[in-house]
Structure formats: structure tokens, C-alpha cells
Image 1 (cartoon, rainbow, N blue to C red):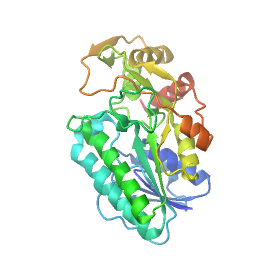
Image 2: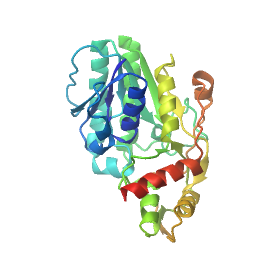
Image 3: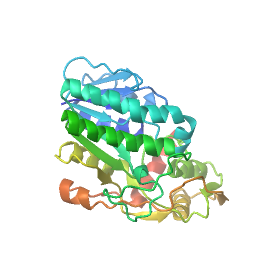
Image 4: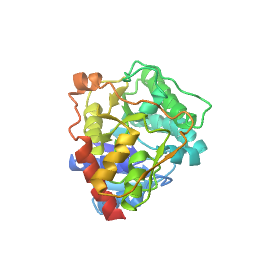
Length: 309
């Protein structure tokens, strides 16, 4: 297939580029590099099946020739990023999704939306199932990301129902691994960078809030299975291995062998108290199951950060 990946120079997008090229597909990577990084895809230049286009997908998207699939992954994805780029985050969720869907319609291509567990907000249901509508503060600081993704899902389903576009929607839970930016702002890269630098690990609140962390190779496997399925409603992909942020910090101190201590700071506005996916749908319809446990995934990620630092 000939596949366009928006946000292809980002953390997840670049791993998708690698994976799909190895599967024998032609990949067009499109990114405006606000949070993407050319270093993530530098090793792919020179391959005839790969091309890169620097472009802001909130503007008209042009791709010559046929196109089989569009994977829409363009968006700031960490709280630090979408607080720094709130308007861009809203625009890529709304205008960017609209432009990408318009291209899918023009090309007769399938469309795949990267949505997020943040659609559930600070959930009142635990674990989170796909039929849960969420608990989101639309005017809070995090609302720019949460509502951009919720709008993107609504737009995707409208194009599916009204124009007959063949669509897929994934709700991605906390994912980590190599190519995360050390200044990303999310817990794992923050903790690893601080531990390797001998700084105190910054834990917000008392650290009792939970996250379920999924290694990037498991996520990419889930994406590919969903791409090739006939499931046109949202599917959770994430790891069931839920732990508190405090335990995560302690685990990273142990893995790195750091002497760092833990520093507690006030909890940010609307920070979710719990986060764990119900993956029954993915198991049943995709035959998907995560295979990399937290200890192994974190060791691999620490090795990557050691090389970068």
C-alpha cells in the first residue's frame, strides 16, 4: 500500500514509518516539526519507498497519485506541548482532521485516526471502556487536547456515515519507549532524564494517581491489526499494568541505579486520578494483547536515554 502518515516524524509516527516500511509498504511521512524530530526518521532517507514532506496539515494537503491509507497522527501529545501550543493543538484536531479526511475522500483511501485515552478525561468509570463518554473539563487547561481529539472522533464518524469513508479510530493509552524527547514533559522521559542526571524526580501531588504504560512496539502492533480489521468504532489500545506515579518513579530510580530522591509538587489542574484501559474489544476483535512488561520496556527506554544523554 501507499500510506501517508501525518505526524510521521514524531515519537509514535516514526516507529510506524519503520514498521510499515518493513512490511513492504510505501510511506509518505508528513510533519511540520513543531514537536516532531528529523532525527527520528534520518535513518530512512535514501530508501526509495520513503519520502518526507514538511507541511502543516491544517492547510490543504496535496499528495500526487494514488493513496491507499492515511494515518492521522499529527498533534502535540504531551501536556507540556499542548499547553505551549494550545491553538495549534485545537487546529490540528479540527482543521487537520478535516483536511486529512478530505484527502481520504478524494483518493478513496482508508482513514485511521489516532485518538487518545484523554477523551475519557478524569474518568468516573474504571477501567475505561469504549462506550464510556468521559468526564472532560472543556474549558480547563487540558481541554485543548481532550476536546480536539473528541472533535476529531466526531468528524471522523461523520465522514464515515455521510461520505462512506472507511475509517478506524484508536484510543491510545500512555505509551513510552525510544524516541521520546527528554524534554517531553511526560512522566517517563522526565523521570529517566532526572534520574540519569542525578536530579530529584518530580512527582506531582502525592503520586497516588495511576497510569497504565504500554511499550511502543505493542502499540504499533495494535495499530497494524486495527488498520487491517473491519472495526470502524473506537478501540482502546494500552497495557493493563497499572501503577501509581510514585511507584513508577521508584521503579525508574531502581532501574537506573540512581541516587536521586523524589520531590513532590502540587498537582496540575484536571490531572486524571486513574487511567487503565479495558482491552476486551481489542482482544476479541483484533486478537491483540500487549507482550512487553513494564520492567523490560523501561530498561529498553533507559538504554535509549543513556545513549542520548
